Length: 90
Image (tube, rainbow, N blue to C red; front, side, top):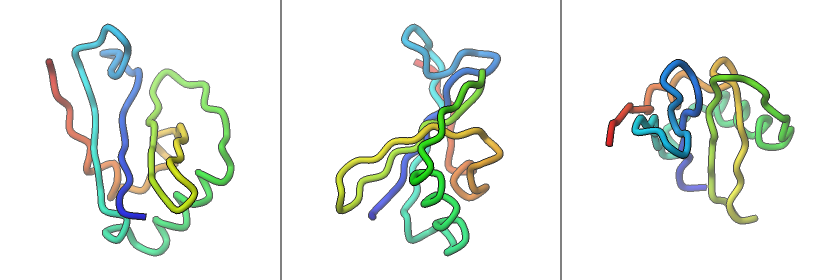
């Protein structure tokens, strides 16, 4: 894997929605994550649990098997990946 991207959805300002002008996005090289963080993310992608929350993040990575996407709650995401998120307005 080369990198993982993260995009925030929901919350007070409704980030990421179809009509939203607020976007929360980040990107990080997979190799920049610790082994423990990589393992935690691998578990998230393997579990593919449904997230039913007002605020969540969508994680996307590209690997040998193609593109994978999973939704996760903020407390499930390693701090290093959360720190890459930047809020922009358009």
